[in-house]
Image (cartoon, rainbow, N blue to C red; front, side, top):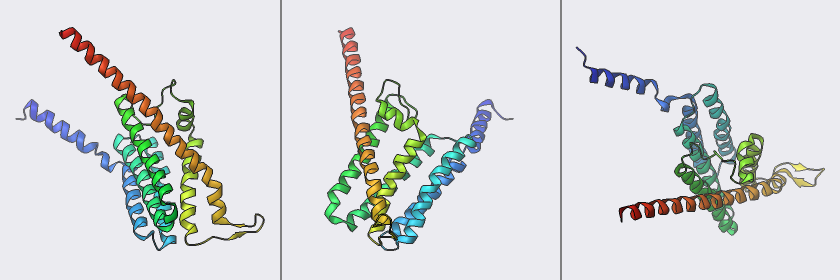
Amino acid sequence: MTTRSEGKRSDHKSRRMAENIFLFVPNVIGFARVVLALMSFYVMSSRYVLATVLYGSSALLDAFDGMAARRLNQSTKFGAVLDQLTDRCATMCLIMVLSTFYPKYMFLFQLSLIIDIAGHWIHSQTSLMLGKTSHKSIDLNENPIMRLYYTSRPLLFFMCAGNELFYSSLYFLHFTNGPFVTILNIHLIPLLAWVSAPIAVVKALISCLHAFIAAINLSIIDVNERQSAAQISAKKD
C-alpha cells in the first residue's frame, strides 16, 4: 500500500520529469547556438567563410528560440540566462580575435569588452536584488532612454544588429575588402564598418548608462539596508 508521503514524492518526480526545462524547444535551440558558436571560434582565426556561416547561424537561431518560447509557452529563466550568456560570450570571443588581427587597437577592444560585460552584469545583478524577473524590466520612473531601448523591439534589434555588423565587418576586413561599390567609390566591407561604427559607439554608451543606473539603484539598496539595520539596532537598545 502506497503511503501519502510516497505518493507526494511520486507526484513531484512525475511533474519534474514532465517539466524538464533542459528539453524545452527554445532551450534545445539555445544549446545548438552554443555548439555552433564554439565551432565558429575554433576556425575563426583562419577560415573566415566557414566561421561566418557558423557564427551567423548561431546568431540567427537567437530569433527562433525567442519565437519558440512565446508560441510554445516555454519561456524559462534558464533559457533567458543561456541566451544572454551566449550573446555576450560570442561577441567577446569575436573581439578577442579582432585584438589579434588589429593589435594596435587592442586597448579599444578591451575597453569595449569591459563596458559590455560590466554594464550588463551590474545591471542584471541589481535588477535581481530589486526583485525583478528580467534584466529588461524597467520601471516608469527609470531613465527614458533605457525604457525606449528595451520596450521598442525594432530599436533593440537595430542596435544589436548594428553592433554585430560593426565587429563582423572588422573581422571580414582582415581577409577581404569585398566587392567594390562603384557609385560610392568604396569597397563594401569598409563601407559597412564605417556605417555601423556609430551604432556600436551608441550601444557602448547605452551599456555605460546601464552601469550608471545600476550603480544608483545599488546605492539606494545599500542606504535602505543600512537604515533598516540602524532602526533594528535602535529598537534593541
